[in-house]
Length: 301
Image (tube, rainbow, N blue to C red; front, top):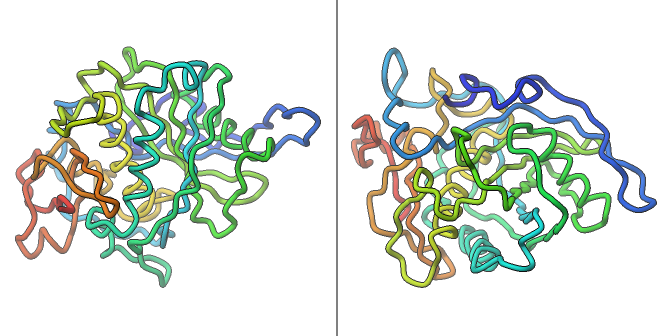
């Protein structure tokens, strides 16, 4: 249940073109949404990686990578202003500290189209939309939410193709078989990357079981899957970057494996966060094992 092996809904598997409802008197945005990539499966299902004829290392599929990521997080749902707890401020700290961290540098070996994934990223802060959230099973619905914030003037699209817009909803996962995913698309012809996250408070299947003091379980869960999705968006933004023969991206290959109790980011914040796959580390024998025993994961500590 990774990348091309999973469909969230029929509309998510094909490229979908829709028109976003206008905000106030503004003109609607035209969007095209790609399929979901890099689904974070609940804890315990990641052991499926590495079976069959799956190659150990990832290979390049002649597409683009993201040399950086210019991130604006969207918090979508009626409860974000009334009961955000520590999640908005915590995710702000996460993206701020990600830049130039050793964790960001776990993806620096990956190249494409004459460019290389770099360690420097930027964060523009949060956008809060207190309308009722929906989607999760449809990439077009989540990209439409990003486009609404663009139309409303809350987001200025990054024209370089390195814009990344994670959407954090207040919807519980319920019986859905994934914690988060990333995807790609266009808004008025501009290429964007985006991601979707359920509300993970009290969700045992998506809980990294962090022991870092001062953070809620819901924040810890979001931070872990945020690292997974951002790392995959940087190395495989359009589904033609880096992945193995079964479609597993660098986050998928190390999902739910932790080599250290926590990783310290460049701003001093600490997170229990899964490792990311490194072809170089596997080949050199310097990585730690994933759930299949393949020693190619880097913790970024």
